[in-house]
Length: 499
Picture 1 (cartoon, helix red, strand yellow):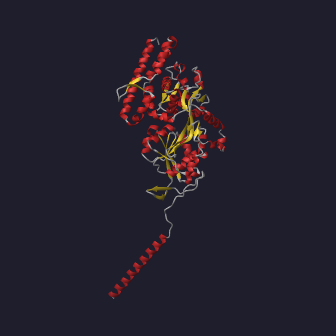
Picture 2 (cartoon, rainbow, N blue to C red; picture 1 turned 135 degrees about the horizontal axis):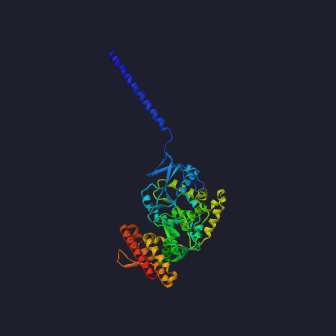
Picture 3 (tube, one colour; picture 1 turned 30 degrees about the vertical axis):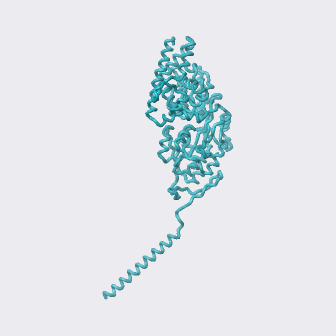
């Protein structure tokens, strides 16, 4: 009996093992028949019409399907109005759906912080802030060439130059590193009511803002301008003035202009000051002027006669972008006629880089902007040299801040005293005015020699100022302290002459 039971048990165990093996083999065969989970990516066509592609991420040469939507991270100098409008328009576009882009995250930081943010990783696109900022990023090797054919086809619709100014920046291999997404001119926005109430003439040239008529009202400021370390557009304006008038005379114009001015932290604060009548004139980029005109019809944007330039406001692919294909698709959308409709928004009012947008139904509704666009591109302005500006830019910004802003109180006192001599002692007036406009001497902290801030000296220290913090701090302190002493001495001389 016991033997029989043992025999039965063995039989049951053997049968159970066989069943398990059969189930296992069957499962293996079934799973093996399913489609592979690895997907491939079809390349976009060379047409400017986007084709459907599978969103993918490549790691160590292996392409895998993205299971969730892409969030593009965009470092920008654009304000929230542009950010919000872009997000709404782009995320509802076919391109966003095609490339699986479900969100845009904007990182709006000061120009001085761009290098650190980009080097920290995670940034896909750089957008807005002017060519100076983007050229700085290029000098640090932080931008990547555009390689996507769809994007390159769209870029071909953007003029290579407008008003003689390049709209694209290429590397040595002819690859595009940044391209203008919008264009801008530079001038001043005036509040005509405020000008009239102060009995001031409407300016037509940069030098008008440095005139005695604007300084006679001191201590009431008549001009608004911004710290170049906080405003890329104002930095470009200062560079325009230095090239329009020449380095030494240009610094003289900037000196008297700043003496007449109220200094604001940002360029948009300058715009608001003109709108509200805090100052009658403010130096601005064009679209700040157009927006001021919409908010206050008594304001007006003025392009200085033959003394301005056209700038391309860039967009670029960031080196090491987490989503390079999706990033380039976004760039292509921004540059396309569809994406350029963003600038037609009455709350934005910017000049598109792609004129094809004016052929759209929305473009036909903005004949006012089209008129301003044609006026802008017709302005030849000055023969501005970008390379020359870059060679001195960092030195120029810090010298401006140390001498004309940090010592602004002493500067105003000196200029106000000089103006009082205009009728009392015309000869001394001219002598001290020229002295105030001249480049004073200071002691170079490295050589111990007495030097002045000539263009060649600015070029010689520009790179070192960016890399040597101790040298920067030494020199800016010397500039500030020497400027204060210089302005005080001129003030005392004016008082002694009868001011």
